[in-house]
Image (cartoon, rainbow, N blue to C red; front, side, top):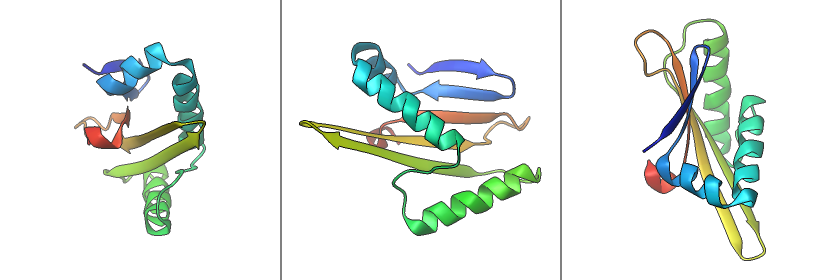
Length: 109
């Protein structure tokens, strides 16, 4: 089950597998937090150039109050026999315009 933290008009949701891994792996938890910070600074991580451009256009539309859609960040960390790969997806799926930011493994999509 996903864990949700409400902050104003935004929801931060951790998919079940990510939530469980964060609880048991401090290095992974630090990686997730660092990735969320990057995402909130408009650093989309390891997405293709075309996706980066679409994210920037969607963000501009969002800032002008007219956006309903999705922004995708992809974050990968390799090292010492461990690989961490997560996606962070921001969307306005709620009718009231509430935005959800979801942290998940690509296999959860």
